[in-house]
Image (cartoon, rainbow, N blue to C red; front, side):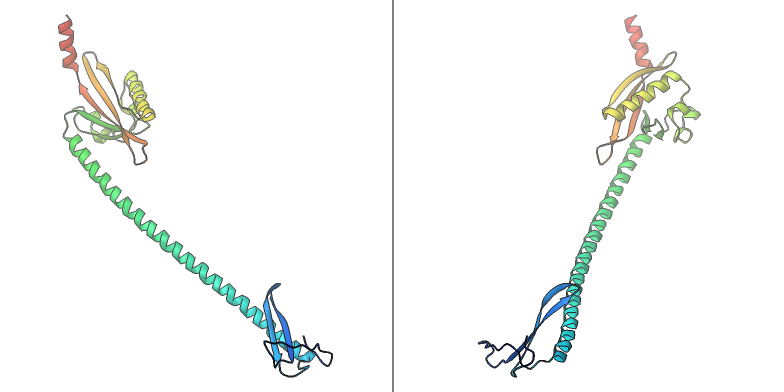
Length: 230
């Protein structure tokens, strides 16, 4: 800092013609960003008024540098956000495509299931975890057991035999809990017997979503067995 007649005289080999040099800090928001230096070929070239003027200039320059840095940082953050948003849009598009393909596959699978079940001589039912009918084919001649009469209802609301209700709920619950198929025989009136087979239906994550059952009337087989034993 060179002010007035009392200025320190110096010799700078890099600036051989310099006789006066003014160095001012560049400070913005309490942070030192650098320094502003001004040289002159005259000795004692800078007055107090010059220093005040240049200090004001240095303050404006420091603020401009700080604003430029903040602008660059904002630009980088905006660019990163754009890349992140683009990545999210790409992932969403991929997810929507996977969901669409999965939906088509499930629809095709459901159509195949219904084509097989609706034309199957066996009585086929599908249940949820609460023992509610999700699907029923039209094998039964009993009007109370037609699909439109039972779908959406529970076994307890459809079947009036307490023992069969308890058996049905217990078996369905077992398949949901174990994920394994089971089969059992039961008697539904005095001379009528059925073989009931229950199998789990799994979702994409491996959880049991529903239970599909097939029922085969084995009354004639049981009668023949009884005759053979007799």
